[in-house]
Length: 289
Image 1: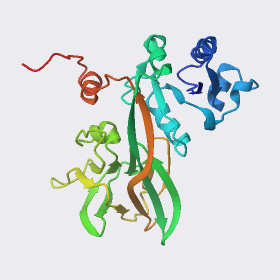
Image 2: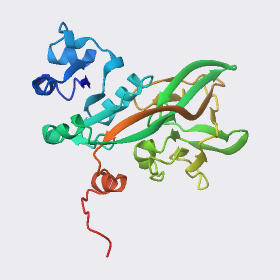
Image 3: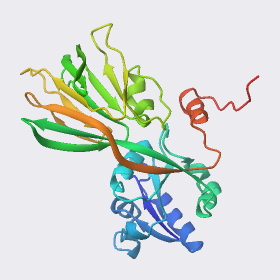
């Protein structure tokens, strides 16, 4: 068996957690490879385990939080390697194990006692005069926002060729079902089960009573255009980690991608239990009645 490790410098600045995990795995005869950031944090940059080879990995352990898992998902999206998320952050909605329980639970995964949770990416492109200027993959969301100034922007949204809405707002969030529990939820969007293959368009603080979140079919393409104004430069932000400016008559076009990522779960994992625990701060598993 061979396991990859992806880390987060801000969550484990001394690298102690990464080094302990490597030692624990090696003691059990498990081969280990670490990504560049994890190796740097742990002071292992020159070690043989820093040779990152996805061709022989059984799965990848992601040490961090949801943000680290989002980064890791795009890092390995061209392979079929599943991810096991270990929460070292605050919410950890996408991750599976709390770091405090890592060594209690990890033996089950090494023995193959887990289920697979497959999630679709959202693919978004910024077009300028018909030419693709930027191309992004998002597991959670793509946000078109107003930039650094506190001025609204005018947003137009199409579903395929049909105009969905036109209104002033702080922006719009285009998300997957996975991303429905992220920024979209804070903006008043609905919670969607992650297995639902749809797109979600959620306006951000719209100056209109008629602008509401809309769930679109997975086959549809969403197009967003913002009105050009010299005093406002709208921004595109992808999973809160990368992005670009929208200039002039730029269009953003998004659709549900065929590309997926697989997250490893314990056999008893249940989305609604996670929802109660993470969002409602309850772990009440009593049966109905």
